[in-house]
Figure (cartoon, rainbow, N blue to C red):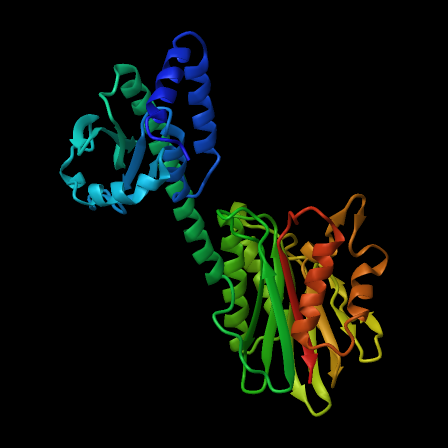
Length: 406
């Protein structure tokens, strides 16, 4: 904790040194690096206050508003003497900040403090105000420096807000591309995991779906669109809605993929190729009957209660590349206790040095260890195996769908 009076001494010493050397520019550069290093809007006021105290002032209060015309509210307060923060907050509560001109730097008094109010303005918009307080008058050099810090802080705050808004919008878009609900399917225990790997402002290209298609049948899908972002999201949305629409109109899984392939190609330059595993689930007396088409997708694996694992899909052409392509469905049975595992290449191509997770049947070996587990437990075991395979964070999206016949 800084003792009373030391803030002025430190500030005076620093200003004196800055006039003899590059400290002024160096400190501005350090402040800029700190401000540019965060994309959290709530962190910027804290960084600003702790940058200027005690170098320029004894205390700093940062005010912001939620909207351009909204009232200013105190979001962060810092004092060189921490024991004085609560008392200062009470004093500031009685100050008419909204009456201050947030367009220009101004000076006034709060009890024993000289106060400098610096506007926080970026790209022509007022974001708030930074108030600095000290026992004596602010020298011109300090005012100039405070204004410079205020401009940099406002730009960092605006960038962080824009980033947060974009991230929120993309999270909403990502949610819209996933199933709104997961139906109850007689005789089916299922587990799904979805983890986008991109930055918060990127929409992942992987998706899954599970939905009712008819009176006695259900459909599922797991796919991977090339790339990320809005273009990939457009193809993901097209795929998911086309699958649901055609399935509910009675088209078989092979016919659905043929029509989806044409729909993607008709997007022209906006088209992205897509790998997809699409299946129809029909409950039968012995468990479940599945009709599957794997369009360029990592092979689906079946696990028997004995621990035996085998591939059950025939590799076929991926979607969005060739016009003249025909698909054929594989029919398989899941007896009671059997498990079907479908993943995207975020699992199979998880890389550690020069090795991939699925080299030498790595995914099948992971699945063989899951005999007797619930569908959710299988999905979690595969996710954990992929995460533990390499020490670095994954650079690819990951989706896992597990279907288990009860």
